[in-house]
Image (cartoon, rainbow, N blue to C red; front, side, top):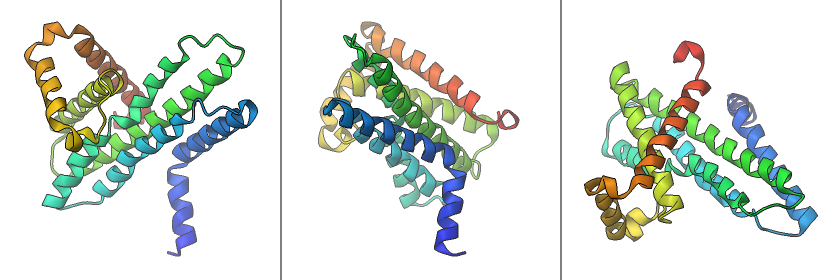
Length: 216
């Protein structure tokens, strides 16, 4: 198969992601040109981070042997996966925005958030396809639920504690200390676990809605 045809087939299979990202880029470009402001340009970087776990999951689903490199790829994927749904919390930046452009800014952030969710859902599909080789249906469901809850927790520590995926390497002790405190003293952190459980429920139900009915 020639490269142009292969590229075309790749784009067709992922057209929802492609068109969603194109819309995001069009909206952010129009805003920058119209307002001469780069206020929301950080959304582009957040979307790039959201694309990393998707690309890793595309590579993972092609693996059919459980080697050290496969395990390393899986761990790296899980570390970066919260970056995809994290963009939904960028809606927080609308606080205090009462200008005439709030309708446009809301649409702008929602478009990026939806693209992040699409990347998240497709990543989960790829993870599920990989696990299908090794695990029965029930165990796959439980593992997916655990991954979704970990992502919801990752959203919390990213938004409120300002940790990111790189801190696992660059600042591991501070990150581990915070996480242990959350686990050892859960009743001292109601917002932590409240946000984790509610975001986990939202992401889980959204993923169920995303998947085809005959696959649920």
